[in-house]
Structures are given as structure tokens and as C-alpha cells.
Length: 107
Image (cartoon, rainbow, N blue to C red; front, side):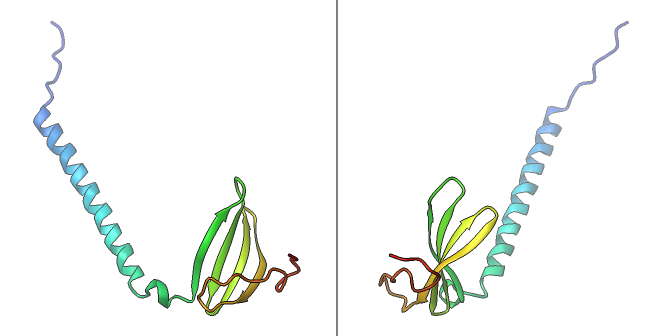
């Protein structure tokens, strides 16, 4: 006699799979709601620190324009270091700053 192969109840397997997918979707939805609730304390305009713009200048190097209250700071970013390149006061306008005022850069 050969051993019998147990039959698989495919309806039960499919039902369990759907249940796992539903639980995963519920957890992801809950995490998104928690993340949204944490960010509701501040609007983007109420925050003191804002990243105005970033520019990739190499594979792992970036320039970032950061606004802190009424100051703007140009920051160089690498994987191991942040360097303030220049800073100026900001009137929330698009007036271009004069390089060289902050930390030794010259135009």
C-alpha cells in the first residue's frame, strides 16, 4: 500500500490568505492615520525650520536651502558631513542673496 497524500482544503487556504491580506491592509491604513495625526500639530507655514529647495550636485552630494525663522542658510550635504556655506536674512521673497556674506564664499 502506498501512503495517502493529505488533501488540501483550497477554500480554507484561500480564505486564510485573504484574511492575512486584509489584516496587512488594516495595519498599513492605521499606521498612515497615526502618521497623519502626528503631523497635524503644525502646518508647513507654522514650522520654524523648512527645507525650501534641494539640488543634487553629485551621486552623494546635495545643496539644500534651509529657512530658519527669518534666516536662510545654504547647506552642503554629504553622507558624512553638513556644512553651512552661506546665510542671509529672508523676507520670504525670491530675491537672490549675495554670496560671500556668510562664510568666506566669494562671487
